[in-house]
Image (cartoon, rainbow, N blue to C red; front, side, top):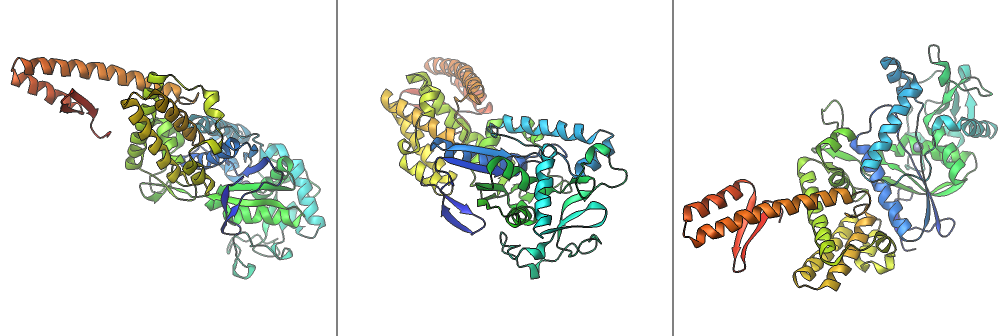
Length: 477
Ligand SMILES: [Zn+2]
């Protein structure tokens, strides 16, 4: 395998080699299902979806574990405000997340463990940390991780303990050190009994960081290949996950892969700025495939900027890509999906494979797709059917790595209905152009100009050439 990935722990691009050759274990921090998914959640899922698709195309057997945090302070608060049981609240949004991921063509994870289904593993990990002197019991059954007990605490984010200050004002009085963090939260009066589990230290519920350490170990083992998540999770969440697992004596993640965040109209998305875009809003305003393209074609470590301009650009790109694939399939037949799926990285254009192996450089990869698309269009224009078929195979296989094959099961209905619209439009425009040609032949210039103006007003650009009139839609070439 020749993939190189940027490892946030070492802050360097490293050769990626899995612990067990041919198998890759990935843990991705999933959603805390307190409310509806937003476009930032989709960005995270799409970024890792491209990594998974690339690894699988290279023949790797990938196990992707993406958890669901279904118990949490905000879930309890919001469900109480809404008068709903917390578990019903969490499940409702878990389903919304699943629908949103499906809508943008994110492949399902191998498994999606829920925090509430893994409390015994969390308690066992916590007991181990207490036994090894890395955790202690505070008042009423709170259990804290003792950050000073682990000399390497802070290493993931390169922060020395001396420079870390704990939460100032709301520091829990039963902590030994303000920087210690909760492994377990004792049940508080007024909290629902269903949100409480029994432990040797008393009833309560797990802290967020503990959940991920326990679930990663359960499904991927003591040491696994890649831990992923957004840049915003590096501290404290990932630092604390790593501290727990290392203190328990486990190797934990060998590579840390963090994706960049998302801005809307140039600003960080927030409810107070009024630019908060839920997945449902985005999908109501934009075709899912266009949204996917806008998210998947930005480097995973860069910030995705979502705006009318970036979506319009994504739409133009999609129309160009899918338009070629449809024309090529009409001319030379559709290359079967299993043939597209069987093309290995070594048989893809070398520049494409090199770009993805270079820390998933999707913008260079997309430029290679465009080169092959141009070659395919030339082949179509020249009546070179072999060339057109080969271009269709490669363009579709490359796009499949990005989750964007226009004739995949996910997108073919979008592509073919757009193709049918295009055919209907072409029929209408050609009828108007024929009428215009007849008017010109009869020297009825007023009629010919009126027909052309009507087309222009509808956004149709007409170019007269020796072979007759050609048309395009304004802004699409
Ligand atoms: Zn996590």
